[in-house]
Length: 294
Image 1 (cartoon, rainbow, N blue to C red):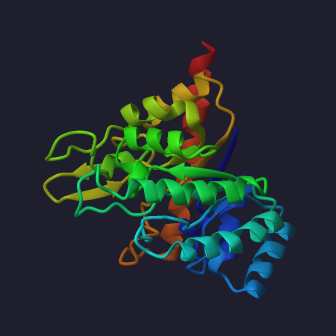
Image 2: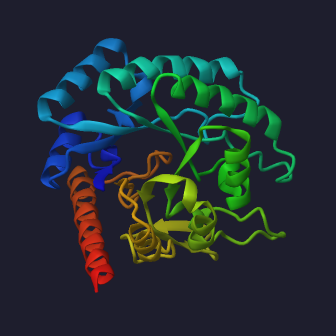
């Protein structure tokens, strides 16, 4: 078991990301963006500088939080866009000796019914993406976010059936803000525990996020892990009791939200929130482990 996190939530620049990771006593980063640019979109010389700096600091990129097939990409976009991202990503992951990559299943089509989402095209693309990574010794993991697989646990199970070799990264907080499109309209929000319980056998990696959805304001507010509706402690207890030995990656979203540029934070608040979030998670894990030994 190990700890890691989306360190671009601690700081935009790499130096701050490394400093926060070391302050927590960690040796891993789930790398997503440097100075606001995703790792697979950095110019080659900039990427090489990043890789060298991580090596010098003794920090490993355990997982790449890519934008491949994410909520910012439509299934109607040309597939070549995705293929080029994959082709750029593979040699960079090999340079970083990173074995996991977060991918998604393209943005939901909210103007269509859940059973009318160009599913077969999604499955076709994800099969190609998954094969390309697996052929290069890299494991793609699908995240339950604002995408096809994130519409409910049944959609994720369908992806696993249709896309051989695909595994899961489960985000504890995303369910709280996502409609459960397995149910009838008006769609209720998902239950993190219910979602997790159905997909847990395929989970090889975990994102830690928590929050509360305010129906009156139609607003999702993130909070410390364990203080919201993400069933974080219950899920972590189940994982550890079942022998889970993978990574726990923090994605606080409390001071900065990667996909919402309107949310700004003082750099010190941003940094301190990230570090405190990591410390609280470690304390929670210690508490759970102690309870399991009794």
